[in-house]
Every structure is written in C-alpha cells, then in structure tokens.
Length: 284
Image (cartoon, rainbow, N blue to C red; front, side):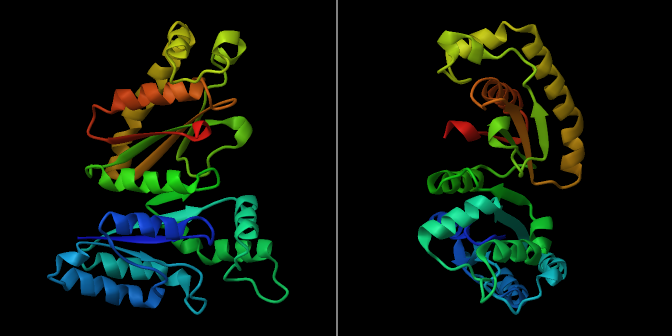
C-alpha cells in the first residue's frame, strides 16, 4: 500500500500530476487539510478495500489555517503506521509562475489587498518550505509543458520499483541550471559539434554527432570519470535510503555534448539494479 503526497507552488502543475495519478488507478483527494492527513492515512492503511492500495493527496497553501511547519511530525506519524509514503513537490521559477497566472487570469490563493502576485509567490515558498525540504522527488516545471509533466509522472510510476531511480538530464547552461538536480557536471570543455557546419542542426541523438564525439579522446575520458564517480558514490546514497537521484549534464546549448553524454551514461547504468531514466530538457 502506497500514499503519494503531492504538494508544491500554485501554478506549478499539481492538478496535472493528480490527474495523471488518477489515470494510473490512484485514489486521489485534492486540497486535503494537513491536520486530516494522519486520519486519512490510518483509514487507508486499515482498509481491506483494494481501492486504497495506491492513494494520492494534494496538500497546498489553499488551507491557510494550517501550520505547515508541523509537517515533519505528521510525516513521522504516517510512517509509524507502516504505510509506504512518498512526497512529490512541484516548483517553478517566479517569472514562469507569474506568466502562467497572467495567461490563465486565475487568482493566486495567497493574494490579498495590498499583496502583489510576486509577493504571494514568495510567501507560498516560505509557507511550504517544510514540505519541500522533506520531498523525495522535486520537479521544476519551469521548462516543462503539460504533456511532458504527465509523461514524466507516468514513466516513474509505471516503472518497476527498484532501490533508487537515477535520472540523467541534459541541459544548456545558456538556458539556466536545473534547480532540481542533485549533481551538475559541466562538459563545455569538450570539443563542440556546433562548430562543424554539417553537425550544427543535429543533436546528440544523431549518428553523425555520436560518431564525431566518439572520436574525441577527451569525451571518452569524461565518460570514464563520470561513471567511476557515480559507481563509487551511488551505493552510499542507496544506503541512505534515497529514492531518486538526478544528475544533470550541461553544455552550452543542451543540444550536442550533454545529450550524447547523458545517453552514454544512461546506457551504461541501465544494466544495473538502478531504475534509469533520461531527460533532454532543451530538446522538447
């Protein structure tokens, strides 16, 4: 039996995640007061009905009377029931959230007279800090559309559960560093296919780019060093009961080198007992 707690900033995609989980057969409740969460967890843990075998609840800042600083105590109470619990926290940068609210013309739950949208977003970040800190899985949706977010949730939930899910994410530094990465590796020092005219429009998924990079000794050395680092330290994170690990590989534009290295690393570790996923942020 599993309980997924979905939280995050308003406008970051919580409703999309809950709908995706519901499509996967989860029993979902949105906007559950934090104070009622232990009672709900106790109910599903003691229920003989298979309807509650997988459940998800949405908890966010709409319940203004809740003291979210008590979340660690609530979480400890749930875990004492022997219930498998996973916390998913969604966030996005301020500019993205402001743009989304402007486009939909929806009101932020914390806006009041004299409080601007930007101020409301900052208050919400602080209010939900305890949930973000305790999250098992944090997703930054600043550069993720509805379909990508839904697919990401489905992919992770449908995969066979293993000890740890390892995600390799390619990105471009000129578009910003992913805030949800546990490790960030800079591969801009490697030879750049961008400067080869016939390779410029291609990506690290194309055969010609792969062939070019495989001929560069520095690329092979970088792959070897990264695999050695991950192989050495990943067991430590598994021993610490980490459920997810995101390793971001960045080049200038996120089109050639980072994509190629992310694919190489994912292929290498896919034969292990880890659950391996690949995300190319700039190729959407």
